[in-house]
Image (cartoon, rainbow, N blue to C red):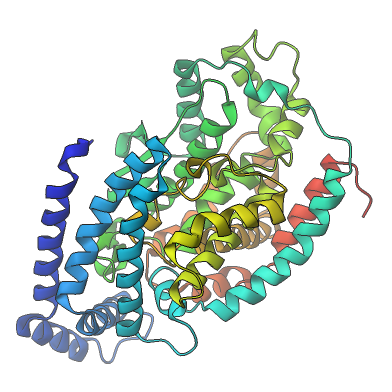
Length: 480
């Protein structure tokens, strides 16, 4: 890992590399190569790999042509130095330390949105970098539909008898947590011969190529939930990258040519669907804990001596309104995302200023969760994304939840053995189904193209809200 003192120099290095990449993309030589490639594939099918590659290259060139080189370079530099400042600010619980970084990022984001272009709202331009085809208005409709289900169910659950959860916060020695995390990631299908798992303050996955896909997790000796969620989540990301067709390695179909980094996922939301599917719809299922609770109890026999698999499942899946997004339960998670998306939108159109973020955050946490934010390290400083300039990225987490439910619904209806396999702790059939229909294609198809080919429709909240409603009404014995 890079030492903290290396961030400034590394940021300048990234700025230089971004400038060189921009120069290469804008060169006459690149233009001639792309024009020759376009002529060579003109008679091929619109869906051929070669034509999709050429189209992606052309789109990237047109994008970078609209963005001044100096803007891209400063953005690349601040993205890296900002993360180092975020780590320090979070450790000190000092939002003021990070505020200048956010203020410059917002200025850059507005300039970037103007260069990209938009019709209705500057947020649309930035969302398109992570979720092409999605807009602020479309998100508003999806979130309105989600909120109409989540909030009333949240109220019903709050008025119901609560499952016991005390044992989730007992002492769990980290070395033994690490053993279980490794086992589960491997059981899901994460290939440690082509990856590794380390720790990080904010867990993530990064793929150099499909043969080098790395994930991180985090451990809390007094909270088993943290490692379980982050490990399953990042393993899902890693499996997606590892299952991309090897033929696409080092092609534009395994590269984000807008952001200029290696990634094979179609969009952030689709990538997130794979992590959320592993973390929640598999990892929080009754069948998962019926199969794996014994392994966990063997590692912590005294800690879990008075707990059985059903109790652990209900506790681990229980609704526990909290301050931290990455540790949120399934039902309240999307409310955390709506908060962040709304703040992004308000910052970009000038409705609020960076200095207002903590107060807006505190008010929304009180309104949505009934919680007081005790320190900005539990509020606006908990996420690293904005410090890295990733305004527009958060909507992908909720889209991932929605898409995950659509994909699992199709998998269970189209391949009969998957349900039984999941109940028996066997994940190869689901992994193979996803690999064949989604993973192997890399960035060849758009989000809606791949969704329609698999599920017959675009983004649809119905399977997701149906899943949440059925699950939580069962856990809390709420009549339908």
